[in-house]
Length: 241
Length: 241
DNA sequence: CGAAGAATTGACCGCATTCAAATGCGGTGG
DNA sequence: CCACCGCATTTGAATGCGGTCAATTCTTCG
Image 1: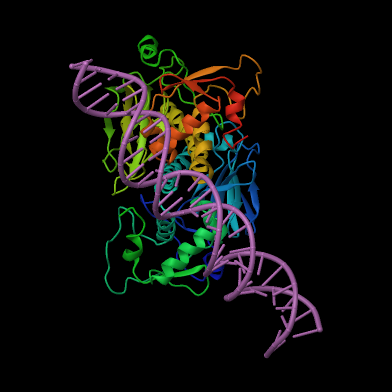
Image 2: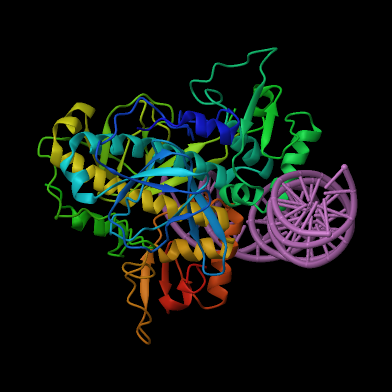
């Protein structure tokens, strides 16, 4: 019931999409491995549509089944910070007081499993899965706090791109691969979304991409399809290694 | 067995210490409400001592019983980001792969309950409490990402101080109190620690404090004992309201 | 009282933002 | 097929906030 790889491939062109760092990763492709609660309600959304608003009352727990979801917060004057980029398996809607502390909108066309609070309380296996995933997301948040607090614009953008490369850069990184170490990734986000995620302006993000391209560290025709001739060369610009 | 209020008072001088925003708060004072697992190992530490290093193998879960704990990450060149400031009841050590993704050191003299992984798995009540607290900490992390990504130095420092004022500024804020709206808080952290927490330099933090004092928004003799003549005036500088 | 560390203040610099203009790209209709 | 429009992105120039470097003051403690 979860598999829609072919449809997803049509959207991403088959590009891989995986986050890294302390071992975390997103995938916008539906996965087959996880057994989901059979009779959970599955909600479908088009790309860039609102799931919940910041401040909404919600005791539900949401699990991304297919596609990508952005969690964000707003300041009264309109400044926006994208808190987390969620992929398949990630969960949200766990604010402790029944009021969502973040807004959630889809990044791509997406499907989301909706669990009522009392169901989560009752189902030990579900709760364990949510708990486990939450721990991973916590690590991602930790990494991102380091990025937001201490990294330069160049480092932020390099880190962002590296997070999309599966299996590289984190603790389990395979290390330099020499020749043939060539990867292509699908950004899936606009420059504005990347800026809001990295705590920068759209112009700064654009300049960083241009600088990386000028230096030959990355290449792209379409601005959301990046190829990386040497992953390690990019990785050295993240500030983490 | 947990109560050591008098000792703690000796350290904080009876100043209150509570975080806010989306309803979260720290307290460095031991609490009486929570029933802890009776035979858990309790580790005691002096102030500013290492509990775990980033990268340490640990499957334990830690719960702060008394005092404050800082979680932080380092970059290879020495830049440090304090990820979270933990108070009584907060938990850490939940990295998903058995390798701690953050370092932890005590802020004050502290006591920490250490639960082995298999004990957490076995004890439903304990697990629920950890889970619940984790959700609160997640919200705090979300708020902090907004601060790090989008707030000015002034706003960061104002927000930081506001987080130490119990029951004010968050969703449940009582609103303006008019005259007599006077509060004193204990910072408990050095300027360097505050800087590492807020993603600033020590000089910028110092300047922000001085500016707030010059404007009459805060007052202090000792640099870690701040009094706030009008909480609402300070709150308006956080950017959140 | 003197020493060591923390905090403050000042002067200057650089990176990221702001403001503005140009370019590129996708879609629509002639 | 191509002209045109709307929107995202890129690029440029100038500004300013926060960082860096350095000197001074404050605090704590022996």
